[in-house]
Length: 174
Image (cartoon, rainbow, N blue to C red; front, side, top):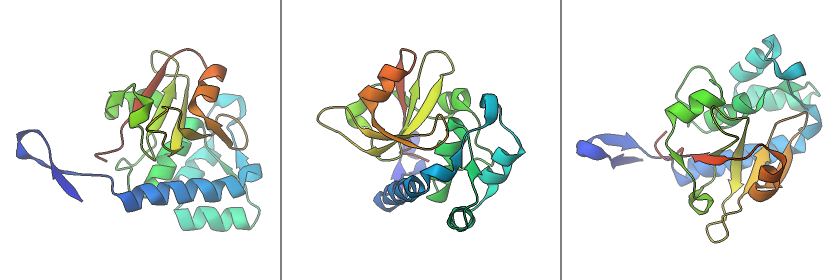
């Protein structure tokens, strides 16, 4: 889908189908939460690189065969977006680079499926992804991969476990 931005430039817009795809990927990953690893000592390894480069089909085939996958939080979120055709960069970057690449906002009521949520100040401490928006209460349901497994948790509950500060990153024009 295309829309028009400032100066009349045509820009791509994340579609409902892409956002639904993000939600479906998250739900499928939750089925395999016991096989989702986190880098030891929060240091990326070659296993992270291999996982990042897997296609959606390859990743779920590996999981179905009982093979674990490994990401840190700022690899996990872009990988999910990549599955839906919403990550245009060849690498996942890191939380700080996501803050530089994507528009930042703070009203969680505006967060749609796939929005990234950064916790902590500066370049961020942790990143999660919105699964279920909450346009009235501003407490969306997140999928958070900040340790082995996968937490399905409300924004306010995850914020209570993290350093102060919550920023949301828009995927609307990816």
